Amino acid sequence: MENVQVEIQCVRCRESHRLSYPNPQEILEDQLLRPVDTSRAAFWCKFCGCVFPCERQYVRRTDVQMLDQNQNHLDGIGYRIAFRCGQENCEAPVIVHTVRDVETSNGELRFQAVSRKVAASCQLNHTPTLINANTELLIVQVGGFEIANVHSL
Ligand SMILES: [Zn+2]
Ligand SMILES: [Zn+2]
Image (cartoon, rainbow, N blue to C red; front, side, top):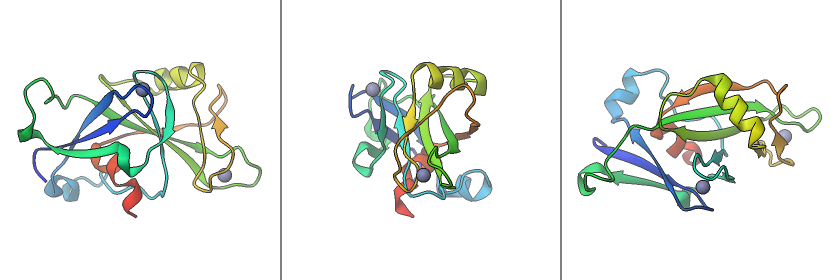
C-alpha cells in the first residue's frame, strides 16, 4: 500500500480531490488513523461546493508511480465534520468529509459550511440537516485511508 493516493471525484464538477493514503505500518503506528465507525458519509466538494453521498464508485485508489508529475501531488488535507441529526430524538451523527489544499481552521470551515448551506443526512438517512451558525460541529483532520474506508465496515 505504499505510494498509494486516494482520489475522490465530485459528482457535479468532476474535479478530483487527492489525499495520501498511508501505508499499513503508518496506520498501525498512528492511533488517529482508524477506519471510520460509520456506514455513510457525505463529501463536500472544495471546487463547486456540491455535497453528495460519497459512494464507493467516486473513490479511487491510485498507485502514485503510475501517475505523471502533474497528477502526483499529495498536499491535500482531509477533514471530517460531524454533527447531530436534526430529526427529533435521533442520536445518529451526520458525517461530512472534505478536502482543502492548505490547513483550514475550524472557524473558517464552519464559516464556509454555513455560507455554502452545507447539509447532509445522518446514518439512518433522515432528511438532510443544514449546518447553521449554532450547529455544534466536531471537526478532525483525516487521511485518505479514513475517507476511503467508510463503506468497508
Ligand atoms: Zn464539485
Ligand atoms: Zn437522523
